[in-house]
Figure 1 (cartoon, rainbow over the protein chains, first blue to last red):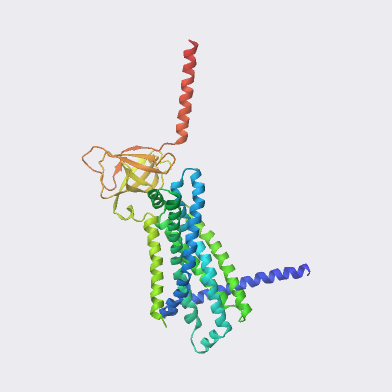
Figure 2: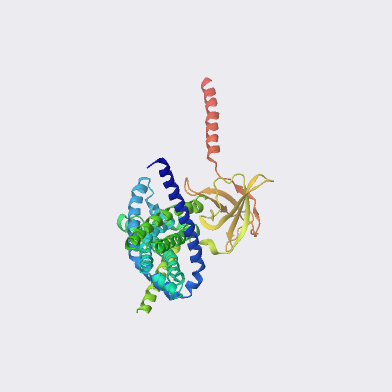
Length: 262
Length: 161
């Protein structure tokens, strides 16, 4: 391939990405515009919360527990070097509530709920269900997309909170029950150092933003997937990759905005 | 089709999530403490506020009685002007003194109030007259070196005699 062809390829790829970004923005604006109508049938949203939120409970709680255990063990090893083992509760709580809770929950959410959303919408498109709906004058955005979007945005902060809470309890089990740190110190240092609005509030805001991002990406990629089995399969992997990268980049931006000024 | 069952499960999930948030707020953070009581403002001027930060505690006898609301520079007296919000349940005499202390040896700084003996109490917006500034480490080291230097020549003078 000549240099000219390579450059042309790069240019075409770049323009293609820009065009997809623009298309996605219009899609998002459209989705938001149809949200109030979609919320009128709240039963649909409840069903979606069940399939997105309830079904993710087990993996989120289990991951929260194990991450809490590991954080507590690793934290103890380093803190006890400086005689600060009593601050273990503070370390785990801050790490969980500020970063681990929202980010890891978002990554797991993208993997579990995001892929199921993408596959569902993609298969609906492949089986021409969406086209059939449009022919019956039922707007698929109201009936199919809006409830799933709202369900994702509602479920994410709840899942992130469960993740953080289970993690803190797991750290308590490791620190106090297994290692023998004083429980009074454990909770006192934590309560002294974790601020409700600055730490927990910011963590909740982060998880809402991640919920919006990953749910929207899952829905968009599913809606725009090729209507073939291979197309759907590619779409599900693309959801995980794009969601994860977006969540991690948003995390950097949000952390810089929220936590850099003391 | 199990619609009621689904709704119950979703309700349970939402309740669990909210419970987790409440647990974090109460057990892991400082929600249950001071912040919502009504307070009144008291001003105090320091020559050097040191590392005092807004939202640092104001303590008397070691118990938190208020928070620092604002730290500003008074351009007329060239001192730091600190506004404290004190819990309405506690009143202090007008000759109370304020000191900037450090929690532990290298911890965060806070304001300690030493109550005086006057009958009249401080009202909202009053200024505390007696204040002691923060300890500035560089000044302390400078003092130490100066004292050592001052001791040395007198010792040599005593030896020469």
